[in-house]
Image (cartoon, rainbow over all chains, first blue to last red):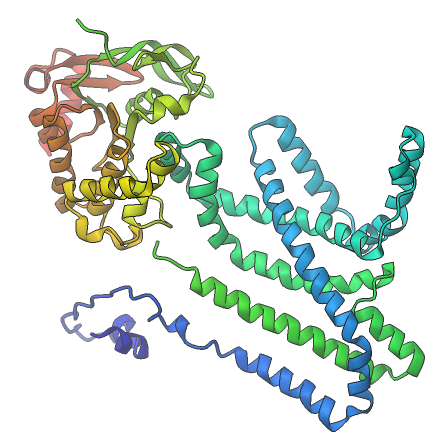
Length: 292
Length: 245
């Protein structure tokens, strides 16, 4: 049976014989692997939802441009801050998560302890509390430290709210990401590491060329999930003086007092970003599959 | 007697409270093919894995190619000279057959890409699967995967090849294609230590057979002598069960 018929009519291959009848002789089916021919290569139907939300936003902006268009213009810079926060933080979260994950499986007891302590402590404190701590407490701690050490760059330490917000997000999400990477690495059969080591590759080479490429495929869905959660959680930075989408919305509402329009539009803007990200992630998942 | 390439002396290995190897002493000369037999749990695989330090032995001495394993500054220098073939193939599933052969040549032997590719394609031809060079392991049959795994080990130009039950995970009709490759290697004079129950292979290729039980070497000898006239009761019992089938 040609491959494309197989996917059009999977019932022919997987159907069960009706009870009480003798099965016809099975037709041998040769399944060939043709990259891109899988049904997953078709356009994901959930793109329609993204399109629908986009249309809804455009309709609001066009048909009721006052106040929606005015709100959009006002919160536009906040939108960019939200995107920037998410993307920049996520890059560092991936790096920290990878290091943390490797630390969690390290044989060296000191590295293992440090990584485990980090994960356990950070996961036990709410993100909002962490963000507030980094914004209000961390600079004071650094300044006092500088005074004690008589080190003026530290004593006069000042930092932008956005930098401290990124630090807070990275430290918090890095701990969750470390657990995801740890699980991903441990899901790879230990024979893979043994095979690599038996060829004379070092531990790091084996990780770099054998384990991590396979682990990345495993962790892509949860990592994508974290990205979407991060995108939404960036709204928390609005309480620590970062003018992100949420904060700009609050500012507009304070000036004009039209909560329904403001928060409807803000919600839709977050929604279109998360829906779009989800589609990109699911496309990546399908693209990166290889035969196992 | 020349210096043995593998020298094991009173090797003990524990897994927690389980005493897996109880004083193993074994010498393997260059060019020898040693087949290790024994019931499951007798320590055959553990012995093999101690030779390339995948398992760390607790006491005794293992010297491979002149290097004492425990004191080896860099175990990777020893390992690159020892090819290992696993029961479950352990091919790198994210790489094609050819790339499976190329990876360690590039990272460990530091060969140029072109040279590594040439060696890979020659070896894939040698094990009879040139046409599958661009397939991923998941697209290959068990026998084909195991032949790629053998080629991958050979690509490092090892001095010793270790085989850990290389045919146990294979369908019967695929066993022969793997054993044929191993026979060719044996004929070419490769030093091999093979854990296997393939009596036919042992008869055809082994210079020595070793019977193990409960972490000890019970008996050793040429395959003909060991199979036809075992002296130990445990060997007789084991062979009577295996040869019946």
